[in-house]
Structures are given as C-alpha cells and as structure tokens.
Image 1 (cartoon, rainbow, N blue to C red):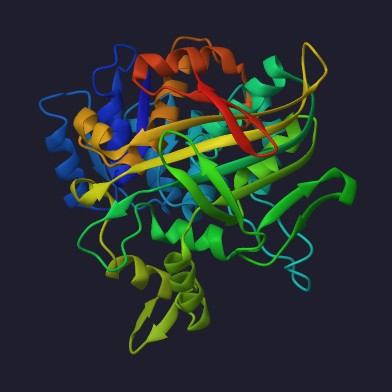
Image 2: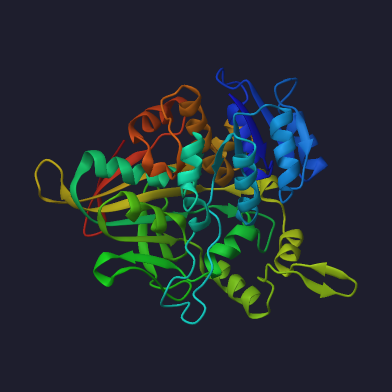
Length: 414
C-alpha cells in the first residue's frame, strides 16, 4: 500500500513509527507544513527510502492532488486538525485515491438555539458525498482514530456479539496522566480540544426525537475507570461517536463524556470569555491572525511532552441493554488503556498520540490485505469489528472488558 500521511505532529509521528516496518506498507509519504517537523520525524525513522518527505499547506487542495499523483498513492491519511478536512477530503476524491481521517468535518451550532438544537452535524459534509464516492469505487473511512475510531468498533462488537437489545452506549474518556514542569500543557491538540469542548455537546436520545444539545461541560458524573485509574469526573463534550453510533447501531441513547478536570475546564472557559477560542482571523496591527492559533503557538507541542508525562489514559464504551443469549439485563465497559511509560518504550511517542495512532494503522493493514473493502463514505461501524480486534494483540494494543452493575465494576478481563 502507498499512503500519503498529511500531518506529522504528535499523532502523525506515532502513525509513522508504528507502521515503519510493516510488510504491507510499500511507501508512506510524510507531508507537513513544517520543514522542522518533517526533518525530525524522518530522522527518527532511520534510513528507510519508503518515507519520502514533502512540505505542503494542508489547505492547498491543488498541491495535495499534485503530490498524491506524483507519488501514486492509494490512500491519503489525514492526521491534521479537522478544520483542514474539507480540502483534504476533496483532494483525495479529485486524485482518485481512497481517504481516511481521525475526526469528522466540523459542526456548526444552531443559529438561534445552540444549547437545545443541533445545527450542522459533525461529518455532514462528508457523508453527503457518499453516493458519488461509491459511484467511482473510492472509499473514505471517516473518524478512524481512537475516539472516534476504536471506540466505535467496540460499540459495533458489543452490538454484534454481546447484546440482543441495547438501551444506551456511553463513550467515556479519562485517565490520570500528569505533565511535569508546566502549569498548563494539554497532551493533545489544543486547537481540536477547544473545538470539541466549547461547542454545544451533542446527545442522542430516540425518545426525545433524536439529537439535541446542552451547555458545555454539562451533566458531570463520576466514572470509575479500570486498570488502577479509579474514579474520574467526566462531562458532556461534543464528539463524533454521538453522530455515528445511532446511524449504524440500534440504541435508544448515546453520550460522550470526557474527564477534563476542573483546571482544564476553567482554562477553556477563560479562553472563551476573552475570545481566544475564536478560529476566525482578526487584525492585530498589520497582521491577520486567528486567536486560537495564538493559543496553540503559546503552548508546548504535545509531541514533545512524552518524557514529562506519567500515568495512563483510558477510552471505552459503556453499553447497557439485554444479553444476546439470556435476554437478561447486562452492562459492560469495553476499553483500551495505554500507559505512557509503555508507549514511550515502544515507539518514543507519548500515550495519547500512540493510543490515537494504532487504530488507523490497523485499519490500513486491513485495507491493504483486502479484509476491509468497499466504496463510499463510511465510519468504522460500517466494517466487521472482529478482524480489527484480532489484530490489536499483534500491535501490543490490548483491549479489556469489565462486567458492570448499576455503573460499578464486577470483574475485569479481556
């Protein structure tokens, strides 16, 4: 398989490191706006001719098309911030190659009732084009990171094997990661974190007519994460799974809750209060700059924080319903936990980046081997989850499952 990887930040670097010795990978073109990042990541990969580098602006549709044709790539893997999704997605279609990203095209709040009604949904731009992608025989897999991505595959597995009837699927993301030496240093893209955390959170409830929105950081709950992490307060956040899961899995309710912590929430609220979350450019003297880009520039690059991190991060789906075999009530939490020390030992990449990167690499392998195939625009739920979960052990990326009752763990396994 010949891949062009757009974006070699923390997650892009981890993707390249995980895929570097895979026999199914013929070529991975590393493309990024930053020549410095390209040089650093290329150096880490060693003397491997199948990793050429190209400097490119991710908003330049024509240049992306030119590079895809120059390197005769089969697939464009989009690992940049989701505000670039539309031109990259369109470029892949124009270049007649397949496409994969880690997050969907952005939403737009409802113009008059943003905290009650959804406006333009996440991924709406992409899924509206599924028919024309399918007519050409091209495939786009959208939302194939960790969450969304692996979390959606867990949900699909639960629906296929464990439950005859599903009442609720709740995605829960939390951990006990700490970063030494900084008063405030997010372990993931602050641009994307601001976007998803300050947008109105989306909830799906069939009894309430489908999707609706709430205030940011609403409905806090304490969720007890496994593998020694323990209880973490999680809150509602806008996320792709709430859009994707109800389209493919019959369930009454879907939520996404994130363990941000009080300090993180207070910082995000302050950024919003003074307008530093704005992603539109404003005039500063003779320069036009987006305030959010200034925030990004002021904070450390998440790719550089691995040796200062300690702890674990966990993502999973809490599924409630009736057991497929017995018909009795059942609750499970299917999850993946990544320890930062172990991630650093394996690839030299920090935990959040590594955890996000493994899923798309497994998906690339399944595509390369013809195990996953098709055309059109689809999320991970569209594909058979079984071969994906079988591959996780090969990547030292194990998952676990906890039986629960009334939200409390009974036992662990996996």
